[in-house]
Length: 137
Image 1: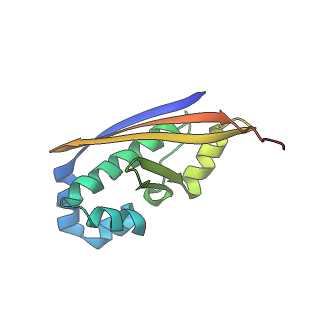
Image 2: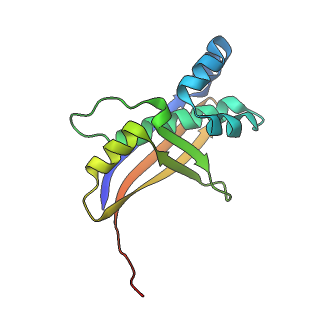
């Protein structure tokens, strides 16, 4: 069952300007070491950072409740699996929030789609509760 959806659009130039102006201070506050390593390997790191920035916002919206506040930037981690598909890991306050909205006997699954067309990056997230079915031999 779908628990929530979230979307965000981000101006890539804004992220590039933040990186130019604040450097590692901005990067370390907003992105994990694994996210930074991934983005820095790209020809246009700013585009990859902007997609992850939008993803963190979209995921926060997808797992938000009517009385929840903001999430720490480092509590939503976006990496790519070997096929290139973006994968979300929730940590700290995001994990707590995700657990709070997920019914018992279910597992929270976050589906994420990222896209960019300079100067914009977009993200769309779906929070889904999947029944936790344990197979017995």
